[in-house]
Image (cartoon, rainbow, N blue to C red; front, top):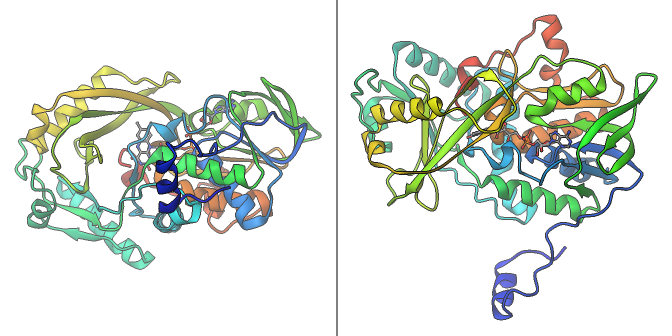
Length: 414
Ligand SMILES: Cc1cc2nc3c(=O)[nH]c(=O)nc-3n(C[C@H](O)[C@H](O)[C@H](O)COP(=O)(O)OP(=O)(O)OC[C@H]3O[C@@H](n4cnc5c(N)ncnc54)[C@H](O)[C@@H]3O)c2cc1C
């Protein structure tokens, strides 16, 4: 793989950009791989990358029914933070946030990580207490956050109105090293690096069956034929329930639509990410100047990748209370993704009842930020059968009642 560099950009500019090679190969599937990963979203590609980088396992296929990054990875609002409450969550999300800091260099691909800071507004006394508690927990976990008062909030976000008609702003949980990244670039960067290691990324190929022999994985049936493997990692977010059914077991997961929208581009007016979880809305400004807006998930299960109109209305109405300037914005477009929600709002990174089949799912509304950390831990689980980062996120926690309750930190916010 030829390295991307300022020199390469200058050289290509001089010859009309005709010398760029394809970023990844599009091979036909082989008959057998050591490991098959189903799902070429960020988490599947990161898993494959760290299988190769950390464990030298490169006879790997990543099978994707659509185009890579076309699921939730390419549909999210790109918020990256690690201010969760429970220790196992802080460990995996902070690992992830720190991997984002060097990702562009590690992948030789500009993922536009922008550590601009993330502020979660406290708009009720209950939220003030909740976020103060999280700040204390984060201090013990080594995650840098602080609870700030309304004056500091106004300094950080001049366009905010502190005296909302329903909920005044009482303070906020501030993580200065949180931020955003370019979601497609994360998928493309991992894909390019995986392809360079000799892995096969097979797009437009749907897994339609999982073959077992005596409770052990043999391979998968796909729309491009049968492919055998020694190990199978399933990383398909909102479609995890469907794949689990193919493997012969059920997951404690619900699939629901989550949507987002962007406004027309406007002048720079907000250089951090702000989330208002009491009213269910959050906001950041893209490099192009669009205001990127998200809200809560739909209240019913579905697979439509669209989302309902009343949620858009609720989200925008909520944001207008705290950011009156939103009422003057014209909205450009809206889209949805299907997210995979567990009861405790924590992910599943686990072995399963089928030997050598592993599932990575349940990231719900907030898994983009976890992409590198999830891939790092899940690769270790697949390669070695155990991983400290994944230990508390096994399927057995639902049977044993050892929940990792993140409903406050992850229920709606990202
Ligand atoms: C509107 C919206 C906003 C969000 N905002 C944020 C945010 O700001 N911050 C944050 O951290 N998270 C956010 N999220 C959540 C985040 O996007 C996801 O948690 C994360 O991207 C999941 O990545 P993934 O790789 O697991 O899944 P995906 O990117 O969905 O990848 C799964 C892939 O599996 C493929 N697949 C499914 N079934 C099959 C099959 N049978 N055969 C082959 N392939 C299959 C799919 O086509 C898909 O490409 C948001 C999500 C949405 C929808």
